[in-house]
Image (tube, rainbow, N blue to C red; front, top):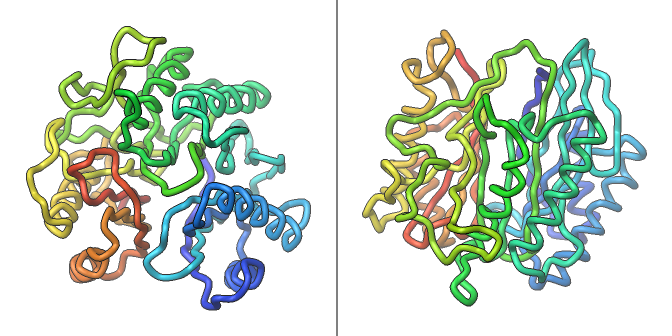
Amino acid sequence: MFNKEQIVVKASTRGTLKEMCHDIFASIKELNALKITFFGLPESSQEYLVTNRELHNIVKEYFGSQSPLVSFIAQKSSSSTLIAEVTYLVDTDARITHHSRYKILERDTTKELITEGIIPANITASTFEQAKEIFIAIENILTSEGFRISDIYRQWNYIENITITNDGSQNYQEFNDARSIFYSKAKWSNGYPAATGIGTSRGGIMIELYAIKGTTATNKPIDNPLQVAAHNYSQNVLEGKAIKELAERTTPKFERARILGNTIYISGTAAIKGERSTDSGSTVAQAEQTMQIMNNLISKENIPTPCNGASYDLLRIYIKHEDEIEAVKEYMNAHYPTTPKHYLVSDICRPELLIEIEGVAHTL
């Protein structure tokens, strides 16, 4: 495995997009940046596409041929017009091969693939068609580098208007059905990836992922006894009708977390006990419940390798209602004061859920 870390950097200026980017780049120029995930709120789908293209061009112009991968997520940050989550490589002995939409890291027998945010040609097509197109592109990338689909260990799924239903079909369910069809091509003997499925305001569907093969490091799924595994949900908690390609609605195919070496990738987590959402209508109460669930997930007793528990390295906190951010910040800072975290305005995968949290942790 490779030692990757994350840092969150906000633009301190409110100038042009290029000026804000250069402000961010000044803070990371000494890092071996692999990927920059930008967060901002464009006013329209057209502005999203234009900004996404400009960000790619600005990054390439600044960093040159070995520039970091770029993703642009249409979510408003609580702290800046433009914010960036930068993933950088700590290891100095890894060989890096740069491609237009992905990078390959290699050392000895270990080979890792990381992608930028992959989007479809038409972001106004149905959720199912967009996801299907992206998964074809992902399969082509994996195959070209000798990876199996089941080598994916972390995936981010961004879904515009995630809970909206059109003619009986819910966007999130359409995405899950497309993912299930794609994943059915593989044998998942070592569990599914850790994953996040989260809403965006613009941009259609976007997928980012990590995949690894040839590693001797621990690579295991982590279940949570407080929650039913998402891939084992019953039909009772799935929304919308089944797509015509399938006999029934399919479940979200992800694990609650995965451990790779001493790093734990925590999937998007919400206030769900068993398979049902809790009945709290308070965002802060759901934040507390969510963190209790996550704390149990990374407890010493629950991690499937010998350790003394784990510590959070970064938390990404998605909040449905912007006016609740300050209250959630107050709670999180009181209980997790030293943990790096950032807050984004986003719809969540169930209408009754008000907050979702994902993270990275390391074992102790």
